Length: 307
Ligand SMILES: [Zn+2]
Image (cartoon, rainbow, N blue to C red; front, side, top):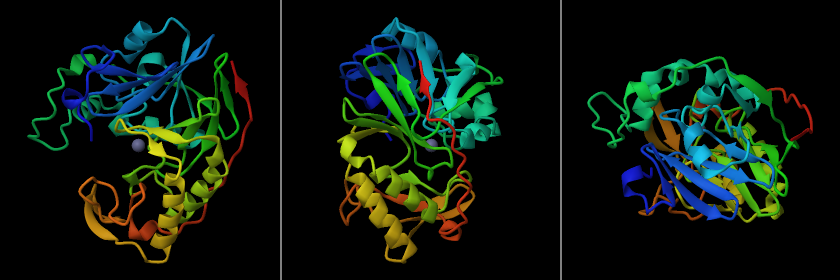
C-alpha cells in the first residue's frame, strides 16, 4: 500500500492530504493510509468520489481545490472511503452499504485514527501521520441518498454513471465517465480484491457482477481505484471473470493467507511486482465457505439524474 511520505511530489498538499491532477477536471486526493478519493469537476458542480478515512478536514481541503458546490458519493461504505460523511453529514451511497457506515469500526474515532496512522496492531509504530484524536470528527447521523445502476451525476459538461458491482461489499458501485473513458472503481476489482470480509458477496455473486460490469467495458479504457496511483486497464474485468470461474472450479492457487478472524485464501500466487504470476491484473482474497450463496435480492430504484 502506498504511503504518503514515499509518494511523488503532489500538486497540492496539506498536513493530512496530497492532491494530484490526473487530467483536466479530475484530481486524485490521497490520505496518509494510502487511500484515494477523486474530485471530478464539471462546469456547474463537482463530485467527490469517496471520502478517505475521516481524519482532518477533507471538506476544507477540497474547498482549496475548487469553488464549485461539491457532493460526496461513495463507492462503498468502508472506513477508508466513507470518512468525509461524518463531516458533511450527507452522502450518496447504495443502500446495501448504509449499515456499514454505522459499524463500530467506522463510528469509533480511535479505529479511524489507527487506520490513517497505519497502526494495524498494538505497538505498530505506524506511518508518521501527524494526527491526534482531536483531528478525528465524531460520528453522526448521515443523510444518505440512494444510488443504483443507471443513476447519473450531471455536473454540467461532465457526467458520471453509477454501475453496481457487488462483491467487495454488497453495496459497491463504480462511476463511469464515458467522455473521459475512465471509471472510478473504489475497491471493486484490483490486484488485491478482498471478498473475505463480513460484508462481501460470494464468488458466484461477484462473477455475476463482473459479467454485468463487462457490458460497459467498451465505454472506458482504465479504472482509477481506491488504493495505489496506477490505473488498471479495462481488461482486468476479463481477468476477474476468468479468476472467479477458476476459483469455483478449484483451478486457482488457493494459497492460505492470514485474515481477520482466521484464514482466507489468496486466489493467485503473486510475482515480485505484486501482480499474479499467471498474468493479468485481478487477484482475489476469499473464504472457502462463501464460494456460493443465494444471491441477495436486487432492489432497483431510478434511474435518476441528480443536479
Ligand atoms: Zn473497501
